[in-house]
Length: 303
Length: 234
Picture 1 (tube, rainbow over the protein chains, first blue to last red):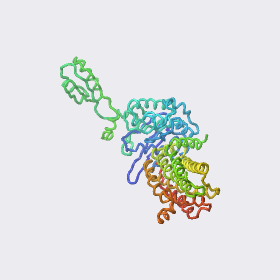
Picture 2: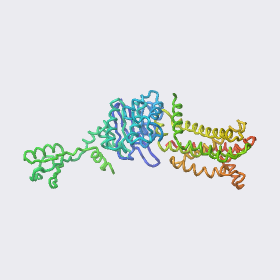
Picture 3: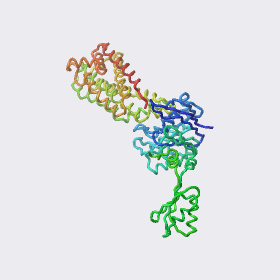
Picture 4: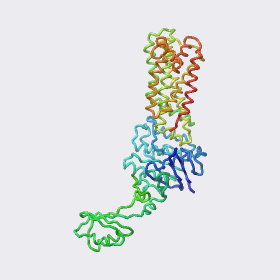
């Protein structure tokens, strides 16, 4: 059963259309990603789903409830981490968890959450004294303290250092393992690729593709690249250019780059082996969601 | 514990950890003690002045800064994703700020009557009426500042900018009798001036005049309606 069902969602501000027919559904127990550059409607979409904003058109069902009409019931069952929210500087970690737990009919034991999210030794620390990673973990713990069926996490690793990001990702996988459906809003490709079971790619108020990260990447109609360093003086350009699937070979000193499609990499490596040409640092560039986005929109993700 | 009780406990702790709320209690007390050392037992001016300063500080500094900061930090917005409505937090805050004003005034009365031997009126009803209306009027202005200010710092700045002219017109910087007539007259129509004047009436043993009571009530109603109209949760 779909936990979230969104059909043909539209939202306009004055003469500006922010959401232009958004449809997607989220299955129970998955991590579903809303991916896209900033300002493409991801946050507006989740805010409509959470009941924070009213959509102009379309329909939304979350756990069978209407976010506006059944808002009170829905808010018992969802947990939310918002972008750009803070707590009062002087509130202590345990006070925030204890307070938020009191909002829900069947909350989780916040002491367990303190342990799980590595905040036990920060129990009596004030919010203003926490590091960025600790604040972020506290926000996620607050989103989970009501024992939600669905957790919405908006840009949860923005501003974190690489190590803290990795650690947060591992924790999010644990959240999924505990049976909570997670909706993740992100403009980080690597994050979505690492965490999400399925992704909806946003562009200018529309969803331009939905699928698993692998499906989106495989759907890209473009060349792969492989690179290696020559360990001998033999020039392999002519040899490799004629191989099936290879579309181009360039050489810069001892560094060679081969582009191609299909199984061209196997053809290249066996040709090198057959001709006894030793190479080192052989690398096949993995295609990423970045390439998928570029292929879908004709624009690079960061522009 | 119910949600409101828990919310009140936490907000009370936060208020106590905030240096600003300690200052709003200490500043009027300091003024009372400095000027009160030579107070005559029948004085009807100093205590109403310091009470008005205390309520003015809570209404113009504490209320707008706290609420605008809560909105700026997204705390009200975060709350609206939970089963609790952000209005509950607003209500709890207003009650606590009212308690703060009450504490500051109670402390002033206690110190003035015991240590300084000043006169404290025994007519509780007119005193309570003047206090309630004055606090309502000043809180309404604080709410309007919180409603229109973009963030906590702006709210604080606007509060400071309004406090000094209002305190001057109200006769809190120098007694109204020593002010230019026209300014003293204008002061009667400001909420803080009307508050000081009605307190002074009570201290003189009379009932507070209808004009200052009416002025305070009018500000309380009109300004809080405006605040409600302009207030944004995010």
